[in-house]
Length: 245
Figure 1: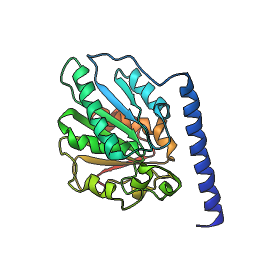
Figure 2: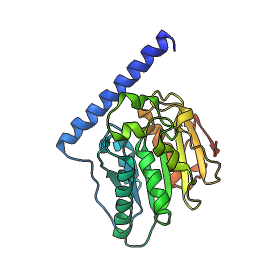
Figure 3: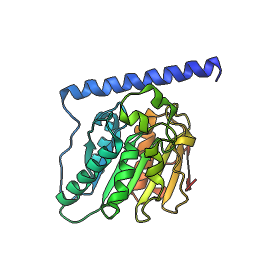
Figure 4: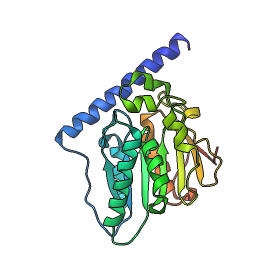
């Protein structure tokens, strides 16, 4: 990596850190919450490493405006991801039961949160309609070497956790959508790809960075995924997609 690339990478990491500090500052006044309506479809939103619920505030607000129940998930991001995934399963069951009818839930997650969401979906596929991953390190990330905690170890490429996560494939009844940022300095395109050849997995590439995936551009694909994949319903300029690639 040349000097220019190194400088860009450093600034990208500082920008990422600064944004997380802002999210924590916002939550000093309270967590991100929305009213729950039992008759509506429900979306669970899961944040990534170092973040909190407000890191997905843009997507959460837009989905609530689209008449979804929106539940930002909070968890201890330094902990064991396997244990967090099991708690996520309980949360999925809880909100499935809170609805008026046995309607399947939608899962949307950014970065490391996608690993937790993916793991949970494997355990209760009968309760999940769609799962959308924004910049999720399915192949790990070397940036985890800068982190601390059990989760940082599990995020490293080749970790036992990552190998186990996908070793049996993913449930065929769930529609999986993977969103990759072509300018992502935290999780590269290669590392954010789901390395499975399944017809129910679609990949999208967007010209944005890691945090941008949790913003306006990422929301476009989230909206598409929840609408059943009808491209005519939204503007997909500069978004490239394909099944399982």
